[in-house]
Length: 77
Image (cartoon, rainbow, N blue to C red; front, side, top):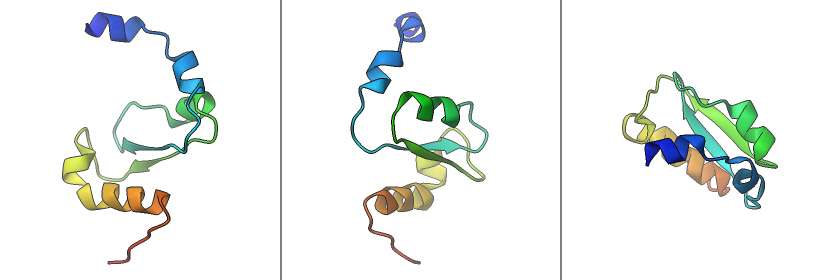
């Protein structure tokens, strides 16, 4: 299954996305945000400082805030 995922061409499925997308990436991650933006029209993204693979666990507040911000619901601490 992993082999199938790795050889899958994601160009067309990504270009077909027509909703707002804000990608969160870990500070030390390998995700290329510029390449992602090139495939997904209008996408935004950011790296979460001091984070690793489990950003939703170890940076839960920052991830939740990013989701609220994308929906225009900024909440100050």
